[in-house]
Image 1: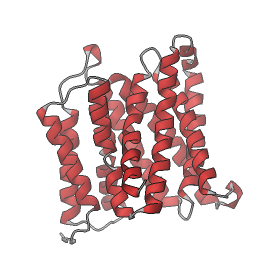
Image 2 (image 1 turned 90 degrees about the horizontal axis):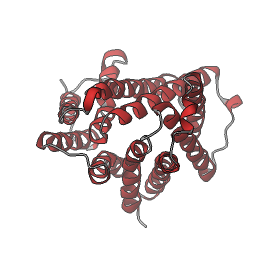
Image 3 (image 1 turned 60 degrees about the vertical axis):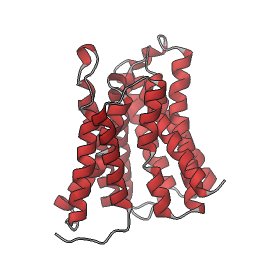
Length: 292
Protein backbone atom coordinates (compact mmCIF):
# COMPACT_ATOMS: atom_id res chain seq x y z
CA UNK A 1 0.00 0.00 0.00
CA UNK A 2 1.48 3.37 -0.98
CA UNK A 3 1.29 6.64 0.95
CA UNK A 4 -1.82 7.90 -0.85
CA UNK A 5 -3.91 4.86 0.07
CA UNK A 6 -2.77 5.13 3.68
CA UNK A 7 -3.63 8.84 3.72
CA UNK A 8 -7.08 8.29 2.19
CA UNK A 9 -7.84 5.46 4.64
CA UNK A 10 -6.67 7.69 7.48
CA UNK A 11 -9.01 10.48 6.37
CA UNK A 12 -11.94 8.05 6.17
CA UNK A 13 -11.22 6.65 9.64
CA UNK A 14 -10.85 10.14 11.12
CA UNK A 15 -14.13 11.18 9.50
CA UNK A 16 -15.84 8.07 10.86
CA UNK A 17 -14.92 8.93 14.46
CA UNK A 18 -17.60 11.61 15.05
CA UNK A 19 -20.18 9.47 13.22
CA UNK A 20 -19.48 6.52 15.51
CA UNK A 21 -19.57 8.87 18.53
CA UNK A 22 -23.00 10.20 17.63
CA UNK A 23 -24.26 6.70 16.90
CA UNK A 24 -23.28 5.67 20.42
CA UNK A 25 -25.24 8.35 22.26
CA UNK A 26 -28.83 7.19 21.80
CA UNK A 27 -29.24 6.26 25.46
CA UNK A 28 -26.08 7.60 27.13
CA UNK A 29 -25.14 11.04 28.43
CA UNK A 30 -22.37 12.93 26.68
CA UNK A 31 -19.97 12.96 29.66
CA UNK A 32 -19.96 9.18 29.92
CA UNK A 33 -19.65 8.94 26.14
CA UNK A 34 -16.64 11.29 26.19
CA UNK A 35 -15.03 9.20 28.95
CA UNK A 36 -15.48 5.89 27.12
CA UNK A 37 -14.33 7.33 23.81
CA UNK A 38 -11.42 9.06 25.54
CA UNK A 39 -10.29 5.78 27.09
CA UNK A 40 -10.03 4.24 23.63
CA UNK A 41 -8.22 7.34 22.36
CA UNK A 42 -5.68 7.05 25.17
CA UNK A 43 -5.09 3.37 24.45
CA UNK A 44 -4.62 4.25 20.77
CA UNK A 45 -2.10 6.95 21.72
CA UNK A 46 -0.27 4.42 23.89
CA UNK A 47 -0.13 2.01 20.94
CA UNK A 48 1.34 4.73 18.70
CA UNK A 49 4.07 5.46 21.26
CA UNK A 50 4.99 1.78 21.40
CA UNK A 51 4.81 1.48 17.61
CA UNK A 52 7.16 4.40 16.99
CA UNK A 53 9.54 3.39 19.77
CA UNK A 54 9.23 6.71 21.56
CA UNK A 55 11.20 6.52 24.81
CA UNK A 56 10.68 9.53 27.05
CA UNK A 57 9.83 10.18 30.68
CA UNK A 58 8.09 13.07 32.36
CA UNK A 59 11.20 13.62 34.49
CA UNK A 60 13.10 14.49 31.32
CA UNK A 61 10.79 17.43 30.60
CA UNK A 62 11.49 20.92 31.87
CA UNK A 63 9.09 22.46 34.38
CA UNK A 64 7.75 24.90 31.79
CA UNK A 65 7.13 22.18 29.21
CA UNK A 66 5.50 19.98 31.81
CA UNK A 67 3.23 22.76 33.06
CA UNK A 68 2.01 23.66 29.58
CA UNK A 69 1.60 20.00 28.68
CA UNK A 70 -0.62 19.44 31.72
CA UNK A 71 -2.63 22.59 30.93
CA UNK A 72 -3.00 21.39 27.36
CA UNK A 73 -4.32 18.07 28.66
CA UNK A 74 -6.94 19.81 30.81
CA UNK A 75 -8.08 21.89 27.85
CA UNK A 76 -8.21 18.77 25.66
CA UNK A 77 -10.55 17.19 28.20
CA UNK A 78 -12.85 20.20 27.87
CA UNK A 79 -12.72 19.84 24.09
CA UNK A 80 -13.88 16.22 24.37
CA UNK A 81 -16.77 17.18 26.64
CA UNK A 82 -17.91 20.02 24.36
CA UNK A 83 -17.53 17.98 21.18
CA UNK A 84 -19.51 14.99 22.41
CA UNK A 85 -22.30 17.23 23.74
CA UNK A 86 -22.43 19.10 20.42
CA UNK A 87 -22.65 15.81 18.51
CA UNK A 88 -25.41 14.60 20.83
CA UNK A 89 -27.51 17.72 20.21
CA UNK A 90 -26.61 18.50 16.60
CA UNK A 91 -25.83 16.87 13.29
CA UNK A 92 -22.39 15.66 12.29
CA UNK A 93 -22.55 17.66 9.05
CA UNK A 94 -22.92 20.87 11.08
CA UNK A 95 -20.79 20.21 14.15
CA UNK A 96 -17.63 18.98 12.43
CA UNK A 97 -17.18 22.04 10.13
CA UNK A 98 -17.52 24.43 13.09
CA UNK A 99 -14.84 22.58 15.04
CA UNK A 100 -12.60 22.40 11.95
CA UNK A 101 -12.88 26.19 11.71
CA UNK A 102 -10.56 26.38 14.74
CA UNK A 103 -7.87 26.83 12.07
CA UNK A 104 -9.27 30.31 11.38
CA UNK A 105 -9.27 31.27 15.05
CA UNK A 106 -5.73 29.94 15.45
CA UNK A 107 -4.50 32.06 12.54
CA UNK A 108 -6.26 35.14 13.94
CA UNK A 109 -4.77 34.64 17.41
CA UNK A 110 -1.33 34.20 15.85
CA UNK A 111 -1.64 37.53 14.06
CA UNK A 112 -3.06 39.48 17.02
CA UNK A 113 -1.02 38.07 19.91
CA UNK A 114 2.07 36.37 18.43
CA UNK A 115 2.75 39.03 15.79
CA UNK A 116 2.68 36.54 12.93
CA UNK A 117 3.02 38.18 9.55
CA UNK A 118 -0.27 39.21 8.04
CA UNK A 119 -0.63 38.66 4.30
CA UNK A 120 -3.40 38.70 1.76
CA UNK A 121 -3.02 34.92 1.59
CA UNK A 122 -3.99 34.56 5.26
CA UNK A 123 -6.86 37.02 4.96
CA UNK A 124 -8.32 35.19 1.97
CA UNK A 125 -7.86 31.80 3.68
CA UNK A 126 -9.63 32.98 6.85
CA UNK A 127 -12.50 34.46 4.85
CA UNK A 128 -12.95 31.34 2.69
CA UNK A 129 -12.72 28.88 5.58
CA UNK A 130 -14.92 31.00 7.85
CA UNK A 131 -17.54 31.50 5.16
CA UNK A 132 -17.63 27.79 4.42
CA UNK A 133 -18.07 26.88 8.09
CA UNK A 134 -20.88 29.43 8.49
CA UNK A 135 -22.70 28.14 5.41
CA UNK A 136 -22.54 24.59 6.74
CA UNK A 137 -23.50 25.54 10.31
CA UNK A 138 -26.54 27.48 9.09
CA UNK A 139 -27.85 24.43 7.22
CA UNK A 140 -31.46 23.87 8.20
CA UNK A 141 -32.65 23.97 11.78
CA UNK A 142 -32.15 21.81 14.81
CA UNK A 143 -34.62 19.31 16.17
CA UNK A 144 -37.32 20.09 18.67
CA UNK A 145 -36.51 22.26 21.64
CA UNK A 146 -32.78 21.71 21.13
CA UNK A 147 -32.70 23.94 18.09
CA UNK A 148 -29.33 25.67 17.95
CA UNK A 149 -28.22 24.35 21.36
CA UNK A 150 -25.44 22.33 19.69
CA UNK A 151 -23.79 25.48 18.35
CA UNK A 152 -22.63 26.76 21.72
CA UNK A 153 -20.90 23.47 22.49
CA UNK A 154 -19.40 23.29 18.99
CA UNK A 155 -18.03 26.83 19.36
CA UNK A 156 -16.66 25.81 22.75
CA UNK A 157 -14.89 22.83 21.17
CA UNK A 158 -13.51 25.14 18.48
CA UNK A 159 -12.26 27.72 21.00
CA UNK A 160 -10.62 25.19 23.31
CA UNK A 161 -9.04 23.39 20.35
CA UNK A 162 -7.45 26.71 19.44
CA UNK A 163 -6.31 27.15 23.04
CA UNK A 164 -4.64 23.73 22.89
CA UNK A 165 -2.67 24.83 19.82
CA UNK A 166 -1.67 28.06 21.57
CA UNK A 167 -0.46 26.23 24.70
CA UNK A 168 1.55 23.84 22.54
CA UNK A 169 3.08 26.76 20.71
CA UNK A 170 4.03 28.64 23.87
CA UNK A 171 5.43 25.93 26.07
CA UNK A 172 5.74 22.60 24.28
CA UNK A 173 8.70 22.31 21.93
CA UNK A 174 11.14 19.55 21.13
CA UNK A 175 8.78 16.86 22.43
CA UNK A 176 7.95 13.89 20.26
CA UNK A 177 4.41 14.39 18.98
CA UNK A 178 3.29 10.86 19.85
CA UNK A 179 4.58 11.15 23.41
CA UNK A 180 3.07 14.63 23.76
CA UNK A 181 -0.30 13.28 22.66
CA UNK A 182 -0.05 10.35 25.09
CA UNK A 183 0.56 12.61 28.10
CA UNK A 184 -2.01 15.18 27.00
CA UNK A 185 -4.67 12.54 26.42
CA UNK A 186 -3.84 10.90 29.74
CA UNK A 187 -4.55 14.17 31.56
CA UNK A 188 -7.66 14.75 29.44
CA UNK A 189 -8.92 11.27 30.29
CA UNK A 190 -8.58 11.95 34.02
CA UNK A 191 -10.47 15.24 33.64
CA UNK A 192 -13.31 13.66 31.68
CA UNK A 193 -13.74 10.78 34.12
CA UNK A 194 -13.70 13.22 37.06
CA UNK A 195 -16.47 15.24 35.40
CA UNK A 196 -18.39 12.04 34.68
CA UNK A 197 -18.31 10.98 38.32
CA UNK A 198 -18.96 14.52 39.61
CA UNK A 199 -22.11 14.77 37.49
CA UNK A 200 -23.06 11.14 38.22
CA UNK A 201 -22.88 10.44 34.54
CA UNK A 202 -21.56 6.96 35.30
CA UNK A 203 -25.14 5.99 36.17
CA UNK A 204 -25.83 6.12 32.46
CA UNK A 205 -24.05 2.79 32.11
CA UNK A 206 -27.28 1.08 33.14
CA UNK A 207 -29.27 2.69 30.36
CA UNK A 208 -26.55 2.37 27.73
CA UNK A 209 -27.06 -0.44 25.28
CA UNK A 210 -24.22 -2.78 24.35
CA UNK A 211 -24.30 -1.43 20.79
CA UNK A 212 -23.92 2.16 22.02
CA UNK A 213 -20.83 1.12 23.95
CA UNK A 214 -19.40 -0.58 20.88
CA UNK A 215 -19.98 2.52 18.75
CA UNK A 216 -18.24 4.77 21.31
CA UNK A 217 -15.26 2.45 21.50
CA UNK A 218 -15.16 2.33 17.69
CA UNK A 219 -15.11 6.13 17.65
CA UNK A 220 -11.87 6.14 19.63
CA UNK A 221 -10.43 3.13 17.81
CA UNK A 222 -11.13 4.62 14.38
CA UNK A 223 -9.21 7.76 15.33
CA UNK A 224 -6.35 5.55 16.50
CA UNK A 225 -6.47 3.78 13.16
CA UNK A 226 -6.32 7.17 11.44
CA UNK A 227 -3.16 8.08 13.40
CA UNK A 228 -1.53 4.83 12.30
CA UNK A 229 -2.47 5.37 8.65
CA UNK A 230 -1.25 8.97 8.64
CA UNK A 231 1.98 7.88 10.33
CA UNK A 232 2.60 5.35 7.57
CA UNK A 233 1.67 7.92 4.92
CA UNK A 234 4.13 10.47 6.34
CA UNK A 235 6.87 7.84 6.41
CA UNK A 236 6.26 6.93 2.75
CA UNK A 237 5.17 10.21 1.18
CA UNK A 238 5.67 13.94 0.99
CA UNK A 239 4.49 15.72 4.12
CA UNK A 240 2.67 18.53 2.31
CA UNK A 241 0.69 16.10 0.17
CA UNK A 242 -0.22 13.87 3.11
CA UNK A 243 -1.34 16.91 5.13
CA UNK A 244 -3.63 17.96 2.31
CA UNK A 245 -5.29 14.54 2.14
CA UNK A 246 -5.55 14.58 5.94
CA UNK A 247 -7.96 17.51 5.76
CA UNK A 248 -10.35 15.41 3.70
CA UNK A 249 -11.53 13.91 6.98
CA UNK A 250 -14.08 16.75 6.82
CA UNK A 251 -15.50 15.37 3.57
CA UNK A 252 -15.43 11.82 4.94
CA UNK A 253 -17.33 12.85 8.09
CA UNK A 254 -19.98 14.65 6.05
CA UNK A 255 -20.44 11.81 3.55
CA UNK A 256 -20.62 9.20 6.30
CA UNK A 257 -23.02 11.39 8.28
CA UNK A 258 -25.32 11.62 5.28
CA UNK A 259 -25.12 7.90 4.46
CA UNK A 260 -25.33 6.33 7.90
CA UNK A 261 -27.06 9.04 9.99
CA UNK A 262 -29.39 10.04 7.16
CA UNK A 263 -28.48 13.69 7.58
CA UNK A 264 -29.14 15.97 4.65
CA UNK A 265 -27.05 18.61 2.93
CA UNK A 266 -28.58 21.73 1.45
CA UNK A 267 -27.09 23.40 -1.61
CA UNK A 268 -25.66 26.08 0.70
CA UNK A 269 -23.98 23.41 2.82
CA UNK A 270 -22.45 21.75 -0.25
CA UNK A 271 -20.97 25.07 -1.34
CA UNK A 272 -19.79 25.58 2.24
CA UNK A 273 -17.92 22.27 2.12
CA UNK A 274 -16.33 23.25 -1.20
CA UNK A 275 -15.31 26.59 0.31
CA UNK A 276 -13.65 24.89 3.28
CA UNK A 277 -11.74 22.40 1.15
CA UNK A 278 -10.59 25.23 -1.12
CA UNK A 279 -9.47 27.15 1.95
CA UNK A 280 -7.43 24.18 3.20
CA UNK A 281 -5.88 23.86 -0.25
CA UNK A 282 -4.89 27.54 -0.20
CA UNK A 283 -3.41 27.10 3.27
CA UNK A 284 -1.22 24.14 2.28
CA UNK A 285 -0.42 24.99 -1.36
CA UNK A 286 2.99 26.46 -2.10
CA UNK A 287 1.68 29.76 -3.44
CA UNK A 288 3.59 33.07 -3.68
CA UNK A 289 3.22 35.19 -0.52
CA UNK A 290 1.30 38.39 -1.16
CA UNK A 291 2.23 40.95 1.54
CA UNK A 292 -0.47 43.26 2.85
